[in-house]
Amino acid sequence: VTTSKRYDEQEQANDLLKRDVDAATHKVSETELQLRTMYRERERFDNDNAEIRKKIEEQNELLEMEKREHDRLQFTELCGIALLDFQTKKESLEKRAAMVCCFL
Image (cartoon, rainbow, N blue to C red):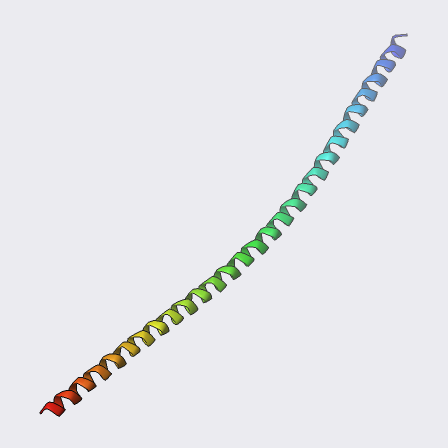
């Protein structure tokens, strides 16, 4: 009787251990699946982040080009204004010189 009882107890312990192992194996599988999902999401995030950084870099380059073009046009405008001012003053001085020559 004791051998049979001991056998039944051992059988119950084995069944309990098997259930615990099955539960742990299931939990490991779930965790591995979660990790794979997280890795995929991280990879997608990294790819999106790289793409966004590339677009920002392109926009910064375009902005820099537009700024240089604006500066060039502004410089050209200032040069044109200075040239017009010079020509106006030159004309005025030439007229004054012509008037002085007439009075001499």
